[in-house]
Structure formats: structure tokens, C-alpha cells
Image 1 (cartoon, rainbow, N blue to C red):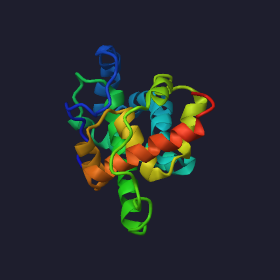
Image 2: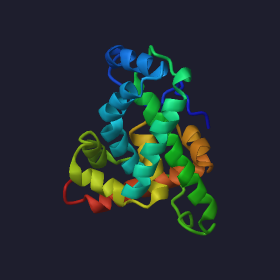
Image 3: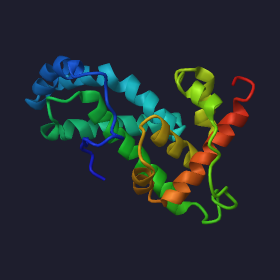
Length: 200
């Protein structure tokens, strides 16, 4: 998968172009070889990228490795970065792709029978209580519950809920069928409802 940020919905976005304007001098200086300038970008965004990737990977050690690799790849690919766009969505997408590569590797290694047997054919339509909690996505308990999901369910839930990816794009990212995306999303929501039932 390309590590460049696309225009389609599902790539990470920020509130406006204001951050692009603020970051532009640092990006320009970093492109010209100023490592201190790139270091300032790393310091500015590393915690935000770390939190995002930790949600996907669920492991601190894995997340640390992914974030470090993402910023190295970002530095080496600065010539491909469009200075008119915000830096965070671009670097976070590189990190996300690295995390998804690990999940795809896990998919290939896990037993075929694992996870996907006896899943419901169609998801229930009423998840309004959960949707209300999703709106408060910074709720610590909600975040902990999401991270407690098995990686197959967690990755699908995050890509669908927080990045608003289509089922087809998620399927392509994870190298699974759209039907499996649908089933795992249902199971993720079901498990979250169970874990959070006394808070909904």
C-alpha cells in the first residue's frame, strides 16, 4: 500500500489548513537537511501518533517501534510530501499502514478456523447506546474497552468508526472479504456493548 496520503475519505484529516501553514517552515527546513526542524515536528506529533497507533496495535512495545519507523520513513519521504497539506494526517497514515501491515501478517499466521466461525450473517441495526459513547471517544473507559478487543475486531472497528472507511477499503487494507469486515464489526460492537453495558 502506498504511504502517501490520498484524497479519498478514510485518510486522516484535521480541522483546517491552519496546521499546514504553521508546519510549512519546519517541513521546508527539514527538506533542506535541517534535522532539528524535523525533530520539532516529531516532538509536536509523536504523542498524537502514538495514541492513534496504540488503539490499533494494543501493545505499547509494538506501538513504539511503529511510531519510530513511521517518523524515519516520513523523513526519508519528505520530498513526496505536499507542503500545502497538514503534516499530521500524512505521518499518521504512514504509521497506520505500518500497523496494518503487522495485522495482515497476523491474519496470514492465525489458524483459518479462528475468530470467523459462527458469526451472525447480518448485524443488528440498533447500536445507539454505543454510538452515544463513541461520540465521547476520549472517554478512558471506552478507549480501554476498544483496546481490549481482539486485534481482528479492534482494527476493523477503528478503521470503520474513527476513520470512516468503507467496508471495501477496510477489506482491501486487511486482505479480508467485505463480509468478514461486516461480521467482525458486528462482533466488535457486540463485545463493546457487553463490556460497557453498565455505562450505556
